[in-house]
Amino acid sequence: MLYPLVRPFLFALDPETAHHVTFGGLDVAARWHVAQLALPRVPDDPVEVMGIAFPNRIGLAAGLDKNAEHIDALAALGFGHVECGTVTPRPQPGNPKPRLFRIVAARALVNRMGFNNDGLDTFVANRARARWTGVVGLNIGKNFDTPNERAADDYVACLRGCYALASYVTVNVSSPNTRGLRDLQHEEALGALVATLKAEQAALADRHGRYVPLALKIAPDLAPAAIDGIAKLCTRRRVDAIVATNTTLSRDGVEGLPHADEAGGLSGAPLRDRATNVVRRLARALDGALPVIGAGGVMSGEDAREKLDAGASLVQLYTGLVYRGPGLVAECVRATRGHATPRRRRSGR
Image (cartoon, rainbow, N blue to C red):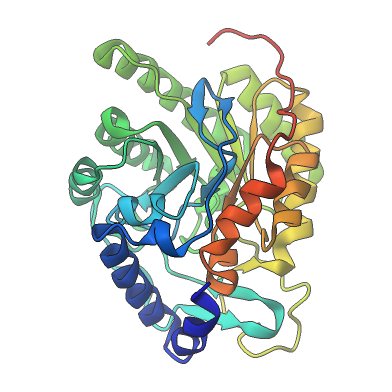
């Protein structure tokens, strides 16, 4: 594997610059069809979740490909699905730089990107240009200056724009880097938002003749009672899946390390146990009513299997790629191959 040789060069760069350099290399490799030659073979491990056939259980979490510009390059790494975004209706620059920090000793990142993206129109055009025909999730949010009482307008606009080109759509109400966004996870606000989006989903399904599942992405910092409440709400409203989790505001495991006190969400190895505990609590509360997609702190194949053992049906990576490189994808697929998918209760849409 080349990544251990390349990583010191990338880590010598500012993290956001390294991000763009890495994608430049991946895009070239995909264009010349050389990625498959340099990477270990990813075995087949088909599984059906949300009514979608996934070639394996390992996917890319949202946040890495914010503008859906690199789908073909990322798919070449062997992912069973790629989730792009978060996209907002209007373009926005995000928070001031620097806004992405490595905590190398803890294999962690802190980011306060702030939904930086080129807007819905560009996002959809980029998605339409991708050649890969696999599973692509599109992650939607609200603009930073849209008040929460009008947040549903932004989410509906994104759902309408993304629907025809999405395998599934994820509703992001859990980023810590847009002021007030996590307030949308409170029962009354979340209930109203989900009701609006489910009604729009039904209308779009009729219009397009195709049902696109709707997932909800939640924070790892919720109290147990709040997790149980979200499980009940999503079951009642027939949400199709829950993604657990986003980044955390906790600094457990990185205290005193350089950049640990930077504002933003923490991801990587220190998030693993916290995220897995949310997956476990959710799976218990849902009791098979709908699937959980586990994300947070997956740095090895063993970590991926742990998420499935806790009750997840699929697993997503992000920070692990920064520290381990593309070979992590095949390692996780091999480690989770043949894992029994959690049994679901029968329920209609």
